Image (tube, rainbow, N blue to C red; front, side):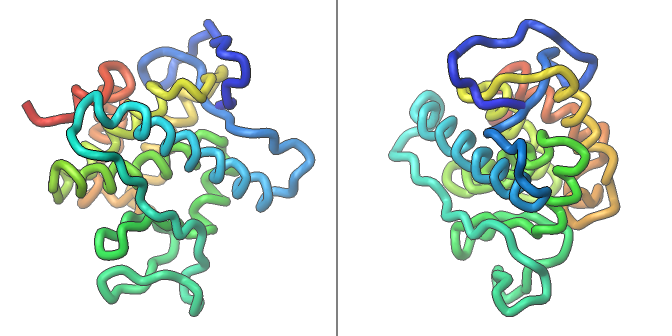
Length: 216
């Protein structure tokens, strides 16, 4: 994926997640070492997702939009890692904490995912931001809430005016939702849905927007 500096889209398509556009890159990461690159990309992702919700909140919801806090990266097991509801932040996880109204992600999860493609960090940030949205207006929980967050993430990324999708990004997003299924807390199927369910939910949001993710 790339940040849209001139509002000129890319008409190429790929065979990944629908809608069939090419995928995501954020800011300039050339010349950065791997850790600097994923951290810079994640900072871009936070800005993209926050701007999307700030711009579109009142299209669907009443009241003023309020961004969640961003704790950002942590190293599990260290004194600096956050806790939520008395539970320490787990390794290989990303989460939204309703008690503190913040989102956080394990540095290893982001680093490893980014190594497979820059779309990963956008997906993780958009999904966890969606949980903050749910808490504000929907109050859903369980697997249904996780799939709804995937749907809202799709609506966010494909609806963002800041992103240009590049060739291969759709495949990266599909792989991000499927390849790690059951292997990490962030992708565990019993509480997030299986790979097919997650991909379908994300595609629904990407194709049909926020409204398709909301209850009738």
